[in-house]
Amino acid sequence: MLPTKVSEDIFWVGAVDWNIRHFHGFSYSTHHGTTYNAYLVVDKKTALIDSVHRPFAEEMIERIREIVDPSIIDYIVANHVETDHSGAILEILKLAPNAKVVGTARCKDGLQKHYFGNWDFQAVKTGDELSLGKRSLRFIEAPMLHWPDSMFTYIEKDSLLLPNDAFGQHLATSKRFDDEVDEKTLMEEAAKYYANILWAFSRLVTKKILEIQKLGWNISIIAPSHGIIWRNNPTRIVEAYLRWAKGEAKRKILVVYDTMWGSTEKMAKAMVEGVSSMGIETMLFRLPFSDRGDIIKELLEAKGILVGSSTINNGVLPTMAPFLEELQGLRPINKMAAAFGSYGWGGGAVKAIEESLEKAGIEISAPALTTKWVPDKNEIQKCFDFGKEFAEKIAKAE
Ligand code: FEO
Image 1: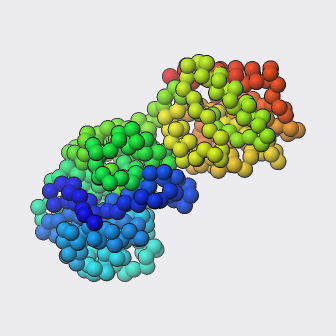
Image 2: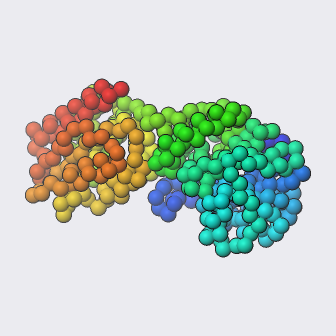
Image 3: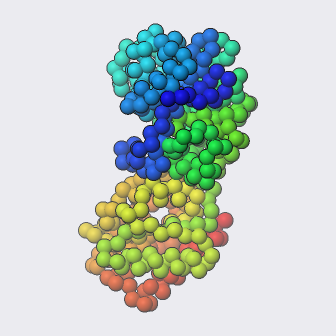
């Protein structure tokens, strides 16, 4: 297990999880696996920045052994409590029992409640520095990016920012740097990561980036805790984060639906045709066959969404509910939406959809369209027109 040099005396010593297909329980699909990135800084003092998910502890330790004896580690910087980054701290402390764990005060509380250890802990806050010898670690708290305990570590000597989860991607690869992997895949995974992990905290994302820019730090490498390291013009991912946080979107409309006996599906497909007739890009997703995390990623850069469900028990189909629930948590910025669906005797689904969209902070841009039982030719035409008119609104919204 070999480490990878990131900068002079700084090494990636993380682990690659090729097989993980679901993250955060089953809330986020990881089609390309992930990595848990830990970094070893070798100076007069030696620091390990973050660790890995516990099942991968040995992989990390083997990489460290290629550079130094793990027993000489002086500091373990825990930028974030979540177990995919802190899980191997216990194993490192067995080898380096005198190492001090460094993190925010909230990190201390969180680690204690995860591992119940009586560790030598040094709490740090924004502006604090820890000298290792030739270089210092500088800390900046980043609460809610994406947990209350989160912080970034900066090494001025190497112009290196270690922002833990921020700027990450769930992407397992044998390569470690952005200039070694396919750019399209990389940016798509970065977008999916933002949409599913950080979207809800967009206001704080912008604030933190502006705060760091104001500090005037020279940053030539951004080394997150998942996926590849940004060393080839890392400002492009920072700019992408600012765009996503601002809610910049394309002329694109998603049609997301589920159907009981095919009527709502007929409506959805006619709407797609109507949107397309206006020359606007559209994508059709049927739940649950389409992956929720992928739809959320597509929504990040789409201006509009049409959401449809057949009515069952005066509400939406149960397959639709988790998607609407997730939207409420993520609160997408700057989106326009409308609801549709077929019904038999009561049409409660569209009302439930509209209520959920409103709770998610999404603007309802048109009255819902419903069809009793099976849509006839005239009603299919209405669906086509509905899609077309919604597309016109999206085009005008720019
Ligand atoms: Fe990658 Fe919030 O843990």
